[in-house]
Image (cartoon, rainbow, N blue to C red):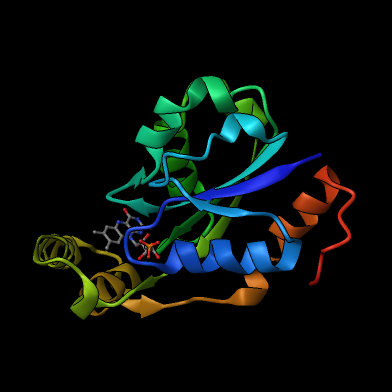
Length: 172
Ligand SMILES: Cc1cc2nc3c(=O)[nH]c(=O)nc-3n(C[C@H](O)[C@H](O)[C@H](O)COP(=O)(O)O)c2cc1C
């Protein structure tokens, strides 16, 4: 089985995870901005994107490529501030095309948010969200940022990739 990783990233943390997964598995890694590569050419896909404003950041790409991806096994990793749980499950379910839900294995990874790297718009929106957030941990993260990047957290994705390919490259 021939697989590939397609990621979308706004500030780089999802790109970092995609490259770590690529290094560990030998799968090719593509930014969804690269329109030359068609996911249809692959037997299974690893898709990755952050949650931005409660939605999947690659939802437009998924919609545009639905015909190419809908019949393939998909391992999907999200990168977010929120950890796994009902809130994240809802954001995921609300922005994934319904046809894909049954094909997808979802792994939630924790990301990074550095206030000084954000656009002014994003920074102001996150300050407003933080000031209104009653949860003290989420409030602090929205106002001050966070860095939970952790290479070892890709292990469940590597294990799922192993089930799709008889891959000699796997290094965990
Ligand atoms: C503008 C903005 C909105 C965000 N919205 C959410 C959100 O709704 N829920 C969440 O859990 N994390 C949210 N985050 C955190 C991101 O998911 C996290 O920073 C992620 O690592 C960003 O990925 P990237 O570096 O690949 O763009 C947001 C971050 C930014 C900058």
